[in-house]
Length: 372
Ligand code: HEM
Image (tube, rainbow, N blue to C red; front, side, top):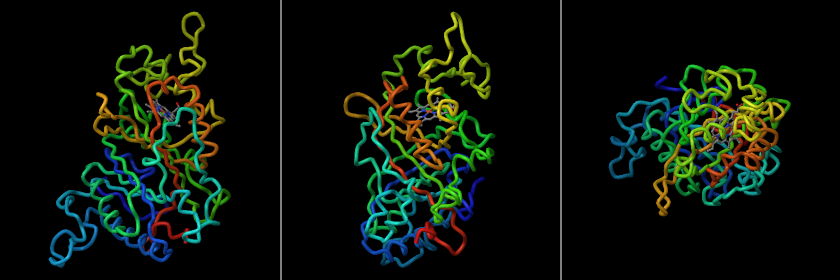
């Protein structure tokens, strides 16, 4: 769809068919006033709703307003269609300190993520009080959305870090073709999809029994900026690449099977009784079969942030996942991967974030209002 509705019971940008581009920002709140924070969330809601409908952030925003004042819209999305823009907000653990009287509202599940083996996290690319994810089929539309929300927040919030993603690495609906990540493999084959209502209920959406009340219908977002050492990967044989993933590179079929969507058989054996999907294959370690049934909804993007000054591309995967309880889903999964996955030789986690994503907004309401 060219326009994705902003209002609804859940926020758009989670089960929405993954768009091609993303601009993600983490912000720190600078104002100490709870009222100013609420006021900002209200202003953001109006602008976000307008922009997802393909309009300027404010009426007569770019031109046609008071010529003596700075324009209320920065203008670079004039004449561009909505491009399926979705804008999704989340609240980080640090928002729930003494500043805004939210201390007792912090969800128990919104943990400070543990340090995982081999983490190489840059504090300047991690955490934040608030995150905003903008996804669109036109990169300029996504960047425009974040830029204008940041502009509206000037003086009340400051950008902590941001990440551009140029290509989706997941499909989130059955009719989307599976895209490829920077290792050249299809990514998202066995993802939770919008059609999997039972998986969504069990693994993504916060329910009444889970609590807290303000987060019912919401979820938790985990972001990981994962640098991929693609030059090393590109010197690895095809056979080894496929063994590391546990799938074929061309078709994306689980080793031992024929087609991309064939169920992986983790016990299938090849010549000499050797398992075709080895003990430390990525898809074995990350599978629900190995993790007490844990699943997550992945919605990440490829990135290339120029080069590192040492003759390498600074490329990778900006991993974004949604789950109902990161303590029993993302954390054990990432723990298994960071301790055993051979892929770790080729990747490096350089940024991290954990955010509680509130339920959707109804007309007349504002982003996150159940929290206040
Ligand atoms: C599956 C690549 C990081 C969780 C896959 C697949 C590929 C892949 C190619 C197979 C296709 C599919 O089912 O989607 C990568 C790369 C990564 C990365 C290149 C880093 C640069 C992660 C991380 C997590 C994760 C950090 C979670 C902590 C999963 C899960 C599956 C999967 C849950 C599906 C497993 C199954 O049920 O078969 N990944 N992945 N991946 N990955 Fe990753």
